[in-house]
Image (cartoon, rainbow, N blue to C red; front, side, top):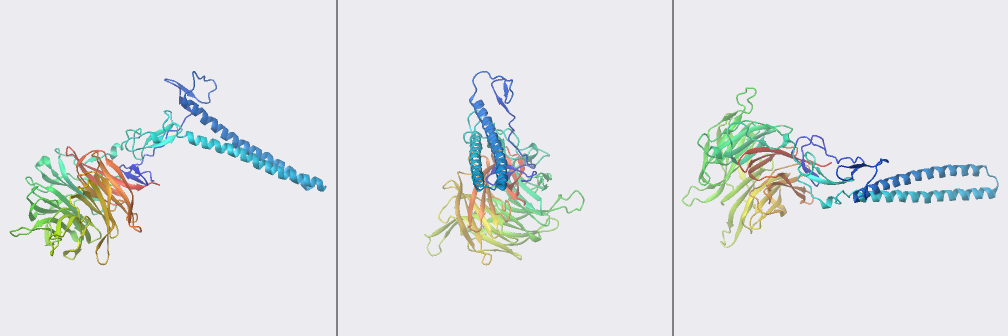
Length: 579
């Protein structure tokens, strides 16, 4: 593994990375001294040192280990010496045999040569067995410690691993962490960083992050300390994991509110933010901005905002937003028909962002005739995507007693010209179950995506994998829902392509039973079409009130989160395979 890898906690063949420079830890080298009581040190090999009292168990084992080492060296040395003598004797006999003319003498010499070879073989076997015995005994002694415990009997701290040495079982910090094995921590420079460093105190919630135009990131949140105003922070992420961030800009104005804001960027250096202005009966709003329009050096991240547009009302659910080529963005949301019955359905809006942040609506496109909530989306290709939603049950038109639950719904869609097109045949992962709550969806490999969700009825986090036929665009479940974890998490989200496209993996982040922030990583076998080597790891040992993450390539992910007190932070972690 490169010395400058960012790393954190080892899991099977993986390292979860959260620091910029790998600090390679090695066990302390045994220096030949052993403890002999309070304030005393007995140095082995010192002939003038007197031992007072009976030897301890540790001292006896140390003496035995050194005796075995000497025994091994003696056996190896004796074997070489005997071999040398036998070779000299063999050569002497061969010379005598060459000079002998008498048949009886030659016969006697040939018998002696054969006996010499047999004797050498037996002697080599004896000394070889002695050396092997010493090695095996030393191997057994390596698991012993001064307290009599091995790695199987001790517990190391977070971000630490145990190793057996001649000094005993030692807890060592994993690569990239510093400490004494019980209190391992990331270097100060690579601890989580405050998202906002200037101005008044911030109390953030409803955080969301996106990556766009290479290494640029945009973060939105609701600031409870400013009467729920919505704020946007933009910046660039450097190679080492640090980010150059702008001060927050409030896209809602002085008096506006922003509940569950979401943000997306485009390759044309433009961002769009969608939100609702009330938690229960909100108006859907969309506003965009262009970066660096002035052309002034040093003002590349300056924002030029367009006007806010409203596109739905009586909104109580989070939306999802996605960017496309040509500075286009899609927003998917729960809507209601403008009729007396106000039938709920799933809707979307396609818009284009102008050079100064102005938004032009290209059209609205319905993706389901049922009520929806908990919307998420992931790109599958340049212009195609999949939506995840909690939908109302679908009742059979011919028999109202027959229905399909759609609480784990997946809908395929794509951008075609100026239109959004959706497959009318969704996939329902739990057609007979209800209470499917938080969810995430992510790209795994070409035409393959994963869908993770909270099964609240059974208090389980599950994940399924689906493939899309490249011709018909029909979705097929290739990995049935599998239990990833047990218990409740207030959030279940995913990051697309967390490692590399040629080495497909899934990554879920959720809250553990002890309120710590966990990452679950699974390998995906495209031939067997099966998940395997699933492992959990802690990336933050504290409770968060809000979090969001996104991949920006090279196995690195950018995470934003708010502490229980509402302080917003960012952190970068990545994945690197162990060498």
